[in-house]
Length: 369
Ligand SMILES: *Cc1c(COP(=O)(O)O)cnc(C)c1O
Image 1 (cartoon, rainbow, N blue to C red):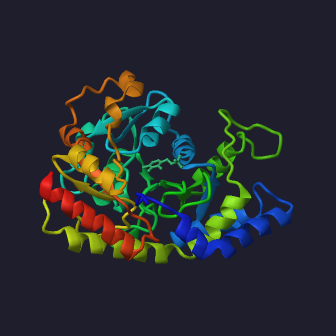
Image 2 (cartoon, rainbow, N blue to C red; image 1 turned 45 degrees about the vertical axis):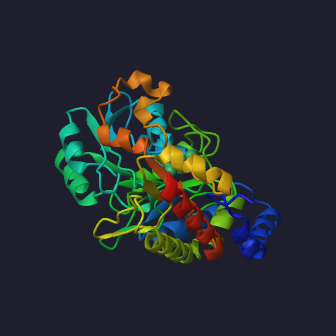
């Protein structure tokens, strides 16, 4: 049996009654879209963050698209972000007609280099979009100051950092808005696609609600374009509501898995994840680095261990983003990382027994590779 890098089946078995009850509740309610489960989840997710508003949407990519629109970002505007991210971060910027401006990441945490972000600000910059990649927050204090100084919108991409904290503050509570994905693999995952935006700002909340509903406020009357249909389905909302109550438990479990990896792999030549001071990492991914990454992965496959690379190509080097004109070689840390990082199996329900098999196989391979 292959040890998968991510799996939800054990979690489903443990939570099956609750999940099926959620599905049944929605199916019997007579309301499948924008009903009480969506409203309830939005309130509870916002409250978890100590914020006034949450808006459920259909996925994390559209959470970013709608957030950018609601913040007034559009054609002619520059958005400072990173290339070491999931492509949807950049797809969203592209989608609203704005221009992504990439800065490199730090060697320590692989997250936005905020000094470079400051240097990248021009008169056209409208928004800063840090990505709290892998499960810990990018350095937010300098970004918050930078946004205030130049009157920029700070939008946090929290798709990988549900429940992460920096100096006690939850991911998603520093910026003007924050976008979340509940894609099944994420720290808080639905049984299908889902997303949300949180904000403390009433005008942003109202704009988000219009944009996700064809640009309508009143039924059948379009107030603004472009309209989207980005509603969150009731069934996912109800499942997410139930799972939100268990989120802190998932975080604890992930941290336990991470601590076991850290202890078992400390004496190898893998570069393990560094937790930056002040950060509480939630380990969406357990990303390690090795100069002979491809050989390690090749050698592990026949041993039944599946690994993943997040991400094998920096966004700016892909054909689909050639129009951005960001030359290869211009983001050296990002580009070096893409050739050396890989992710070990990580999810809340990963058993010690399975993790021990991963560790044993990995240690064996590292001795010979
Ligand atoms: C998953 C992810 C997204 C997109 O979310 P979807 O729900 O898959 O659309 C955006 N940004 C980051 C950093 C992600 O990891």
